[in-house]
Figure 1: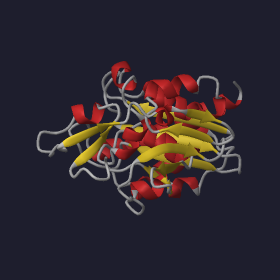
Figure 2: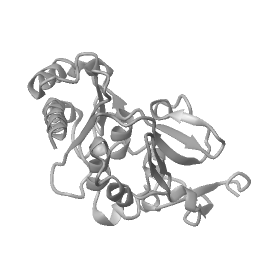
Figure 3: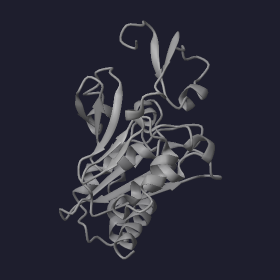
Length: 254
């Protein structure tokens, strides 16, 4: 039906529709995905496969005992507020490319996640976000191709829980001696901080990681918004990198 109905759109959790700006044109028809069981499945094998209609809260619960994916668990379990977490889906969070403050997107970027579509394609999340690989098809699942050694996720709120974070940092030790670092809410699109990754190894201390991040702030293009100016989003990044790396090391000993 989605393929044949002009102006139609998929409907999963519906939270993005609720926050639609008044100047955005709404689709003429929504097609619910809630009755497709395969889209709500979670497979936590050696490569994790998460159906697109899995909610944030369901994902956080499923990952409760998976220490390697602690960063993704925290991203899912601390985003927005309980009401939103109970409705918002992983597919919707990824597909909402005009929403830069998603917690799940940087967590999945750091995990080198891929998207599966109804057309049978597998698309790297990084390429999807960059607009290099968008077919317009329906996302059916998000796949983490390999379990990392460790992962951590930190976010900064200006006021209280429920706010959108002004900056997010996700760090992953993939087990190859290097660290992956993804940043959310700072720029208009979440990104892998390649310049910082090139400077960090898996044994980096939190303090030296923060110092490297401060040196590399000129490589970041922060966005201005009503929530926070761009300079502030960039300025807090070194502290968040330090916290993320410290949490990563703490996960090693839990």
